[in-house]
Image: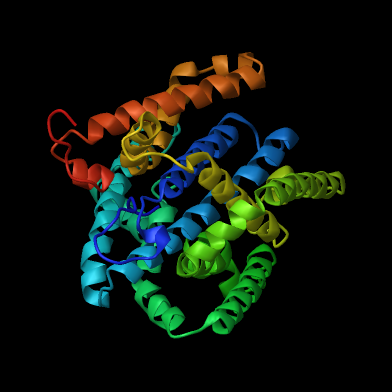
Length: 383
């Protein structure tokens, strides 16, 4: 989830002399999938087998975002190198300020929607809850992503420096090590030791950068070898499409077999199952391939590009606000959600959440507090 990749003057590789439209489309499609997985989880029960199968496939979104973040940060570091302190001064406020703002807003929403019988809120107790939420990323179910992003920002200058000193062989070694560590972390998270450390991992593992270590490394390496990556993706696009189909079928069959042997659907579709790593990598590759093929030949001023620019500009605001819209729709729907067939219910909720989030994000981009609410400066009149 990085800023839009632009162009600069001066000599540059072919990939630097044009806008990377595929990055914006990749980001937008990933956000659309995020809303999908949240609608599924909010409108179905944990023991719903079809819903679990859908969530299993859509869970690639967090890994896709971290891959995209690593890609964008490395791409920009190659073109406009920055020392760590300027990098942190520029990047961290763009995420930290909205993170803290929405932590407060969602903490207040949690008070408003608290179940009957919950102790009456007090100022001191709720301030302590907000502080805890800020430290742990627990104000709402999606804000952990910003906390992990901040951790990535802290270490990324070191990753850039290390990768730039290595050649192709060194990059392959780094990728291999990251893959092994990712598998080890997933095994540890799915079968934590029966001690205090294991309890800590269960409660906080999902909000720690090592849980997603592989994906920003993949993104950074893709940016380092962008021309070669793009050439290979375009050359083998149909093979990649076939690989995606095979990966989907394999992941779903494995999920159904696991559920058939007594594993709860919510566990079988969990993000940190080691078997999901292969699907996540294939999903990221497939989504990038689709984005690259679709946007090939787009003109900077074309209608498709303008529509994508509009959506991309508001994408962070959509991400931040969509659970609020979804919660509102679920609250308004009430018993209707249970009464309507699941397919129609999910489609209506998804469409309503998308449209409501886009409208809300557009409004937030135009208010004086836009930077705090969307991470971007307020739009000028007429934008």
